[in-house]
Length: 164
Image (tube, rainbow, N blue to C red; front, top):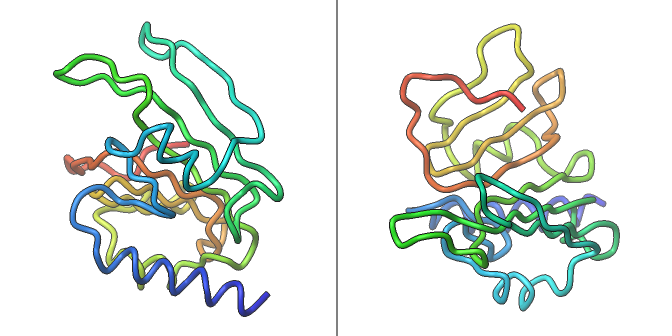
């Protein structure tokens, strides 16, 4: 298990060191990656659903168990991005990683992605916000990562991390 955690941490450090645009992980980049590139990298999802988001049909792919990336018990990828060029149904809008306990801790996140742009206010569940589009939700003690949500780059606007 320790070897797995070290491998995942090294991956985070390599990915984080090159981050200029959107935050990414495992070759998935919101606003750039497509269904084709996600499938090529991670295979077919455990399950796929279609839902309406802002009047558009958008897909959601879930990778669980043995199909989830190493160190994760689930990865959820949401497709469908509206922009100036119209709605692009096959483009990744966001994705969520849910790691096994101990895979990502607060120091691993700061080492990999740097100091956060913002954090949840006192009295709310601990969370980090990065303008690169990463939201990190911690356990109640603020140590272990419960979920990481990757979106398009965002500006802080003087606000704390959004609620789950």
